[in-house]
Length: 231
Image (cartoon, rainbow, N blue to C red):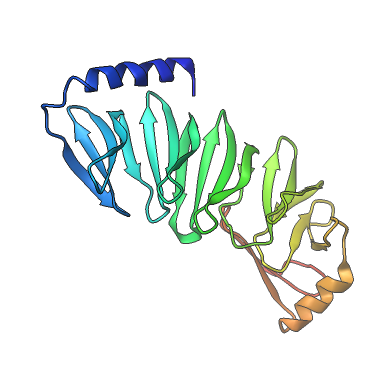
């Protein structure tokens, strides 16, 4: 939180403390908490009528079924976890994007992208990448930074850098990339090395064809046992 935003919130709190005679209006309710409005500002109140956040914010919205609320002051946004009862991103976000179908929220801080998993209630990709997946069900999550792709092992946060990739994919089967020199798809093992034997075995198990998708880029590739793209 910048000093400017902190000072503004404190000033608004002092002003709001003198407005107790004015009734607030309930805007929306979810998970036993309500977004309220008094005059032109918004806050959050629990089911007992106690303020979680006083009505001093420019805007507050529930983010779908994520269990998060987005609070806005000036041009910055914060993410509040209703279930955890804590701020998970403190007025650093320039924007947040909800992906209902993937149960994730992408947040952008100073031009860098990160990903929050609603199912796991945690950040699964830190905000340090130029582009990221919106998918959360994979063991490895792809991201792009400056000049190359990488995969992030979701369980550990380990980063596997990938070079000369034209495309990468969202799949529960492991790490796949479209290699820049041949434009064929290759499979990468746990350490990021190519494993053509496993690729052929996997494709054969799927009747000689394997469908790979990049949900963010809306790419769908069908490959054969040699990694050749057939569509």
